[in-house]
Length: 70
Image 1 (cartoon, rainbow, N blue to C red):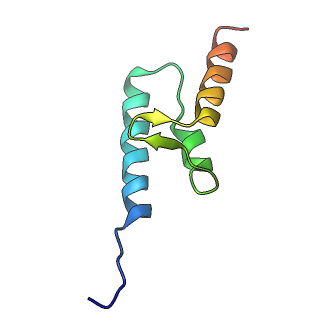
Image 2: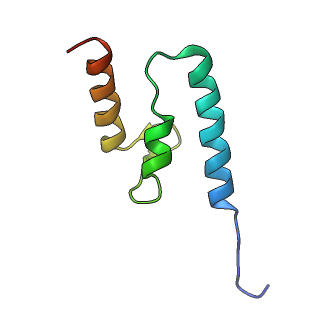
């Protein structure tokens, strides 16, 4: 009513990243949650839900190449 809206975005992002890190720890060889956690405040990491921005895809590709020894 006074024009201030707090959607708790930071808290919601941190909870989502924690869930992603938990899923990665149990089933992934190549993880990206740490990169997203380090960069989301400075540049947009996603275009929409589950649609990562180009810099996230490039980092994931870099890690994949590193993992396979390329």
